[in-house]
Image 1 (cartoon, rainbow, N blue to C red):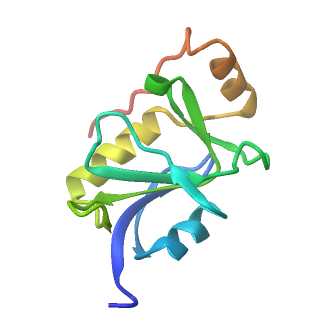
Image 2 (cartoon, rainbow, N blue to C red):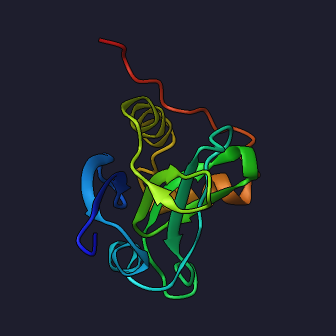
Length: 134
């Protein structure tokens, strides 16, 4: 079980989110975000754990996506996995992966200027990007 893989959604700044298999465990999460992790959970997704770099703002990582429901945004790479009943990370289901991907695409940051504007104005003029349904 040492090399066990789980399904996750990974999003780097200015890129589309990707569903992929990652190694299970803390070290894999830290490698993806580039350092110590902290929670980057998404609204209305209690069955999903999100993680980002704990010092992302301090070390100047690029903006990634907004969480207007919380009045903030996430910088640096982020990773999302399923939330197991025992508090452990598990694979995302296809439905969870789709929900996470949709949220990230709709709230993706396009530029540092845009990011600062929305944060400084408290998201007064913010509107999520709507993706076409195919």
